[in-house]
Length: 219
Image (cartoon, rainbow, N blue to C red; front, side, top):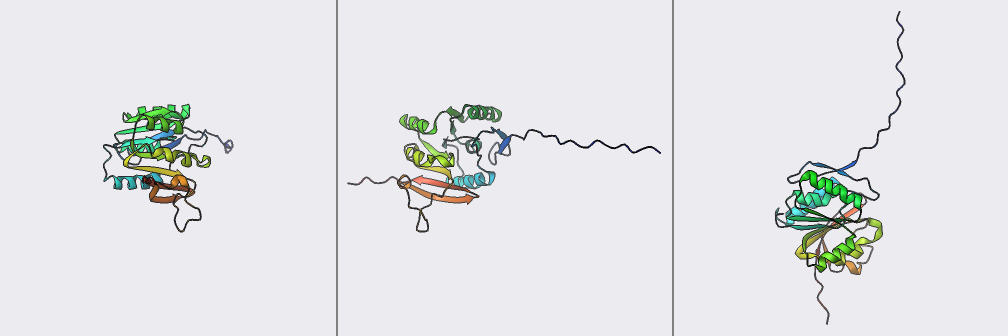
């Protein structure tokens, strides 16, 4: 009788984890999957949040992206900027301070043939100041900064000089930006001229759509 040959015990093979990815959810590049650099603190906006946010914006723009000038000041994965470009934005300017991140965004831009996307490497605050000084204005500004460094308090005042009349700012944060009678916190000075027109929460992420209301000068 032939002896049954024992198979060698399986040795676990530890493959490198797959690269982070983002999926475009609408527009001409719908369902395109783009790799995301595994950089410290890089946190792509989840699909469900992006779908909600772009539904908000699409409704408020009556579905017309053709003339939209968009600025993504903390581009990171590029999920927000490429989503806007996919939907037909006239131009999308993405800013990031990290050279490897910009290189990855360049590769994704080439893959998509995204001629309406411009990439800038630089500090978000300094770049915002420079763009404003050159008179550039945008219909939509994306702000998805690291949560722990109080970036919104610094960058939102700069956005006031970057928005066109009737423009909008999308802002993500680790804390809500809605300050009303039910809020435990007092509205900070840097939020005074901003009105939250849409807001929601997903897990620990608060996301908002803001418009700017000029504060009348006091005598």
